[in-house]
Length: 208
Image (cartoon, rainbow, N blue to C red; front, side, top):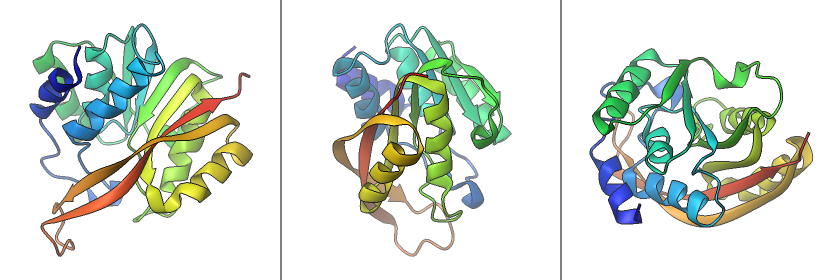
């Protein structure tokens, strides 16, 4: 599937109707989501025919991208039941098969590296300090091949140090820097849209 085709499919998905600020729910736009998954597959072979987990899947954009790129199995995890309802509708609309699980990914009790690849757009940690690192820690415990994750560019050194020192990463690489258009979703947002620099990371776990 070509990149533009993938982005087109993702552009038609429903997003949060009533986003929850405490969960830092922001939609992963089709531009970023398509490039994230397309790169994971075309540069590294980490999606097609692989077991892919989407941590904090929200409305299922990254999950849908993985399914469209022919992952053998896609599982989306999210704590919010309303988001999972929307994600299920999106999967049905695209006619792709995705399993959705309601749970807190930071409290997952999976034993060992049970998926090939984790993809995620975690909370940036602005409402709950350290939330981004909790997601990364959880992802690194279950992925055998790679973890792809978006983090603020301003946290780059902190992320790399923690991944290599604390989270069992064999390598931690910024694949590209992207612009994340944050729409005005909440009352405390003053501007119509904010443009944030984010890094797309690829972390390679050590084999257990």
